[in-house]
Length: 227
Image 1 (cartoon, one colour):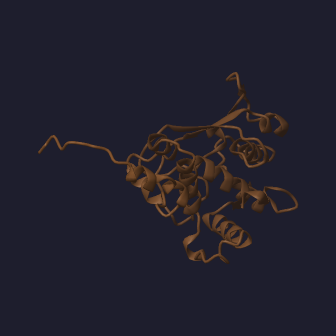
Image 2 (cartoon, one colour; image 1 turned 90 degrees about the vertical axis):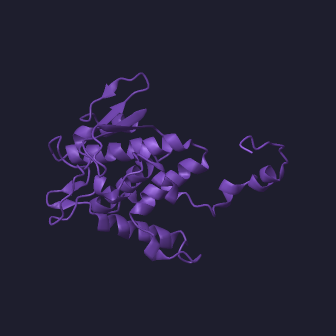
């Protein structure tokens, strides 16, 4: 889905693709980066231009008004959250750049540059495409579904109805777990206050259980001191 960030795709498709990348790396809830329906009332404040900070390796802040080339070469980026679903305020999430195009820094650089090029204020949500058009949750769903079909997930038996916007947050947590990241850090990145994120960690993933049987078969003598 993230690969659709390139031309000749439409501005809406490119924005949607970049937001899927941002959602994956920052473990975002869909309401944190897409525009809600006009009839919906939500506590969450969507990420805005003013919530994004790019930095060089020495910590120097690169202004958001810098040329796209400068932002694309930033070494890290920070998102600051004004308010979110669970009532937390002032949470920050930081990521360093990745080699290649699949990178949270580059995705945010493209979003910020696109919005600023239209002379929008700092309070503009990152979902902004052009006047009267924002990326909605439905746009994310359509692109993720398209990706699930094109990568043969559906052909392998996966139910498309179970793939959606929340798949990005869940797969981000799963990616961290598979790389051996501590539960406490996953909780911090995803802003979970408890172990509810474990519902996203699928026990049937073979990589997680690799070598567990061998470890369980190792005899360890112990005494039940309570007995």
